[in-house]
Length: 97
Image (cartoon, rainbow, N blue to C red; front, side, top):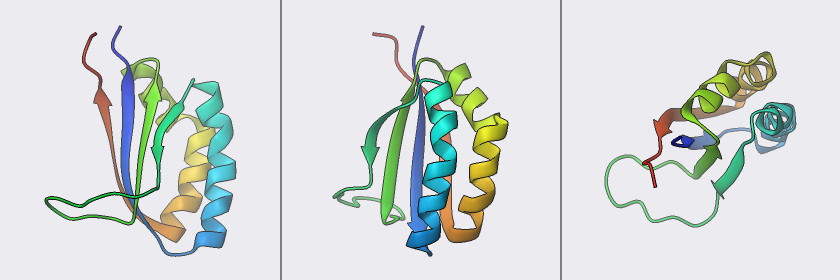
């Protein structure tokens, strides 16, 4: 089964309040087997619009990634994030190995 990935590009407007989003989202990520592959850090914007924070999260499957996003736990975190950050978030199915 192919893994699923969240790919997010984020500009944080309120870093202190963003910490609340991270803490609130953590139970959802744990529940659905999330593994962070990239979380912020240095990057090189080569084409298109760049944002200051880039995140890649791996899940056991695309369905797990979608279920995490739709979970009540993550939706509570999203309600915080949308007030303190601008973001693009996509879910992508990984290639079979």
